Length: 454
Image (cartoon, rainbow, N blue to C red; front, side):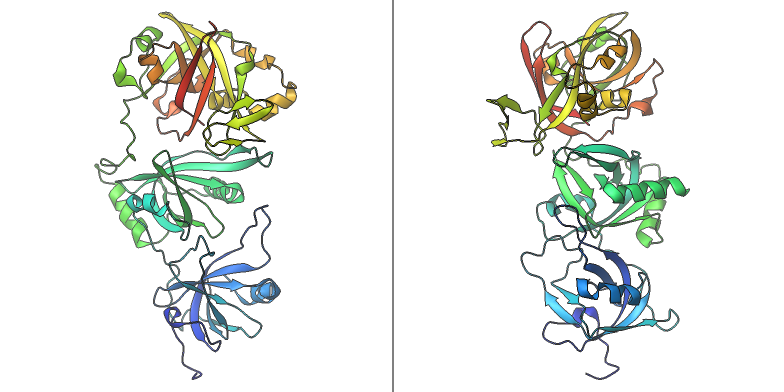
């Protein structure tokens, strides 16, 4: 090969090692083992002047050398490397390519001055949000997406029952104006994102690019989360971001969002207990707010319930084992959630409410596992402090409340006092489906399908 015969990435092939390329390094990451340990070898995402991207793998024995040689964001001439074809076991690829570069002992590189050559600073292969549901059915490729953040929660710990530890999580919802998806960032990635948000004054609404995100579907809602190669870019200098910024300023932006086949919700409204008990079937799966005084917290064994770590449904305790009927398996370390039965009232009457995990956690700043340890598994007397206090509570109206006239209502959120703000109890709360069954105070049982709580 001629000393000046540089090729583009699309032309490198397996079978020779004397390749010469000009590339910009746009990203770097390390894979993670099932136990959470990072591999010593690492990956580089390369970009050439033709906007072709390819992964370059640095093996463990080359890591120290290459880390001194390469800097993310810089351009280089790179010579003498191997080309490896992907196989069926190579999952979650960040580019739509059938091969990758493998750096060797013979690999050499020289930095290119920005004035001498042009390669874009970055490149994305965006998927339309409406395409992501199909992408969730495969495990070969990750996805690049861009959208406007329409809701964002602050970072919070979420219990990982398998590891017995808390994981940090940031949840968001973003849209392209026609469709919307849930966004979930985990662990250090979530911490770095939260620190970025706290440390910088970004123009609102945020326009977020997620590069190489892992797509999934839960209860017909599409979500995307971080994986080893994932990167995020806030209000990035890119034509897609500029286009969305212009669209956001238009009055009809988000007017035709596809809500993933979910049932349309009524406007969140403040209702009396009497009104709630007289709802008709139009209110099934809708959410409303009531302002009540909690009169009594029931002291029973159902204040905590176990659920499957796979399907998030309530599980049964059978012959000394936790069994998930749906997954048909034993769950040795089930997740656990709050479910507190209370009697509350306003001037129009009494109402029985189940306070699910989210409102209880927020009220006391503790999760189930903290409380179980503190009270040695016994009923936590701290819950009695809810009595004789005023609360604004968000209820989800279930089919059993309307069709079966069940007078036990599900609370998905609450805050202390009677000041009602529409945004304080946001309808866009991202939820995890679960299922809970308990005993009514009368002793008869009821079964609530597809409850939602976070």
